[in-house]
Length: 114
Length: 113
Image 1: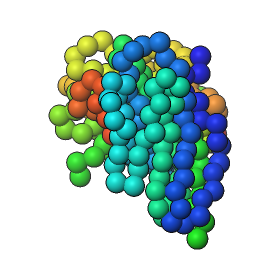
Image 2: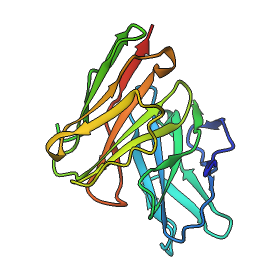
Image 3: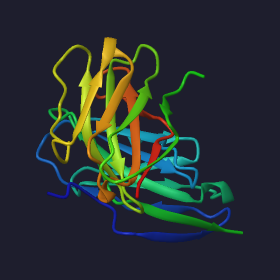
Image 4: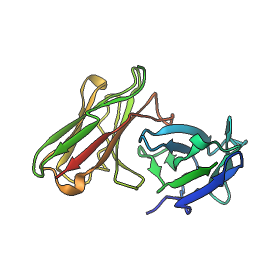
């Protein structure tokens, strides 16, 4: 069963603007972690940000923040002040405490326009 | 460097041949994962090693795929009798403990002709 859904195959944003990448998930486990990774054209997976299911506050890391809405099971990534170097694929992932595997969404390709 | 390394970076093989892909995790990381990423797709979990425990092989797509981790460090993913549909990027990741962040290697791009 699909556990992670990223509904935006592609997104465009103007340089210096903010952009939100959507992610919804499905789990019955009360304890889980949510991750966002960036994959540039070079192919490496770069960890961006983590949110635990019991964290009371939204995670932030520099220009990245995670809009965590637990009741709606959504974990959207917000990138502020977009830069040309932000152009890449972005993957949302989830791992339940009782599972070893991390489930990834299909990804969103972000293009930052000058 | 201190990151996860994988070799080879690229591998071209003929259908029916066996291939071995290598992963060197970050020193001290107890957990190691293998994923497969087909062109334009997300990541597909293959196998998970944690310390000396039996590996979780639930993601391996067929019995042609196997993996081992020697001495709790280096891991080798073996694909026997390769098929064209095995063509993908194979990514390895390691983490320092359970439920921690995974750090990925650069991947091995496998092309089966």
